[in-house]
Image 1 (cartoon, one colour):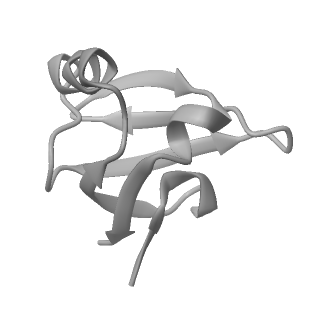
Image 2 (cartoon, helix red, strand yellow):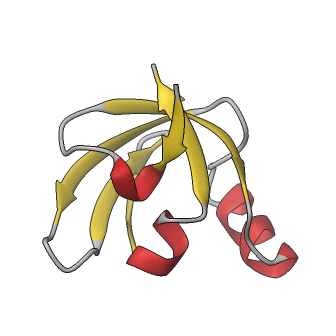
Length: 75
């Protein structure tokens, strides 16, 4: 079942299916290792929308606007 990363739960692993982001932002995330098909672990999720994720050994934060435009499925 496909959903957005924003809809995911902390502690769960998801597989990236794609994104609906501007090209520059999509390329930046790809440079950080978030490519189609890669697993993403949600480490922490704040009620206001910001989340900390782990991708290919690196950790970084995403805001609600970005996370809501990344399509994922449960791994």
